[in-house]
Amino acid sequence: MELKMRLEDAMVYVLATAGYGMTTRRIAEVINREKLHVRTDGNPVTDRQVYAAVYRNPQTFVKEGGRILFAM
Image (cartoon, helix red, strand yellow):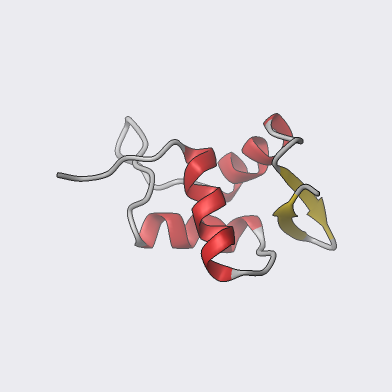
């Protein structure tokens, strides 16, 4: 059975696993490589989608110094 995460959950997983902030592009690359989130149209997650998710979830993510981090 394949586990499907929401994009935001996949981002949390990637950042928590890495232990440091990452660029939106790098987060998208890891999500796609590990197939953590699969879009309904089958296309890969883009860095723009990751960027949009950051701004939809200010209680969870912040952008600082060009990298995405957990909000404190």
